[in-house]
Length: 210
Image: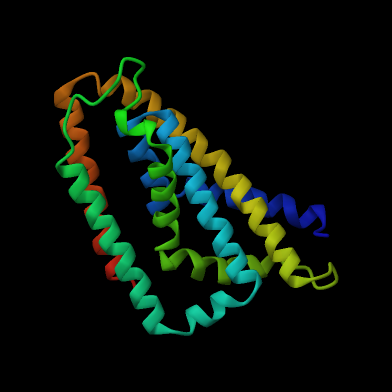
């Protein structure tokens, strides 16, 4: 079992990392602003599911094999960049006036789609698994038992911190977005802004090197 003096600072660092600007929290912010708090929270759950997969990959040694294969890295980052470009296209062509009476976007009702978006967004970013591969083992305690189990526990703590931070982002952006999207002009502007951000993230991911 991990000692408390390891878990507490790790949790604090994870909170700070969750707040640092990155593709995942930007994705939560934009989806929440465009579709409401409920949709944003479902996206958060999808992203956290992806983090659990990355944690398992590190714990069982799969991430090391992936990091050692430039071809696998290139394939995954290409898939991720194409997915982000597709999201940009969807945002650019999104119709205005799609907010329901309760302030939630029509798309927010499709929880399965938003959940899958979160998972795909996280899993197709190869930088996440590389980061976990470099970050989690630093907090493993030599005499605290199984390394794989410790990494799994650290991953769960990281997911808990991420869930806390991203939920706050979803709530704030969703609440503000609900007010903003009462204006068709503001909604159109937000769609185009989101499209530009997604396109920029796609280019940035495509240019990423091991």
